[in-house]
Length: 182
Image (cartoon, rainbow, N blue to C red):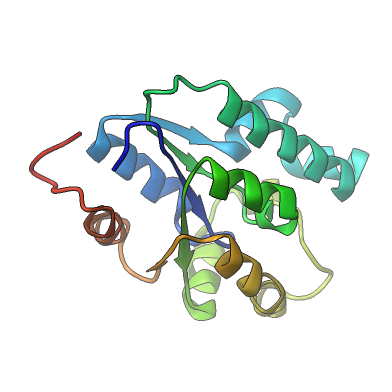
């Protein structure tokens, strides 16, 4: 794997992007960045921001944060970046990620996503994406976004497993031997 690549993890809420990104960055001895955390550090709780400013402004600020992450990096440094679930909704975000790194889609079954979301303690900080029940929302989001995740991805990894196993699969596909950290 080239030294100047970003590794973007994409997928719906609860697909494991943040957890896997942390483990992957530890394995690769490189920088870990979470787009949602960057947003929260700049603007506060996402749900509050959206309630005050709307989804369109949120998506614009999310785009600016992605752009800053890509532009503000050391050219020699690898970054593992956990993105927000809807970052792929904008074509310019999909292109930005593809043009500046490897995009890994953590494809996760609806049932697994629902189980993880029901266990999540931060649910109040995540705004509802629809006015539907959680089960119907997860189904609708997957139906709408799956083609966009596929379009953005250089590789698709099964996100239904434990984070350590998902990380191992990513490292194998990237050709990184785990006993030799880069």
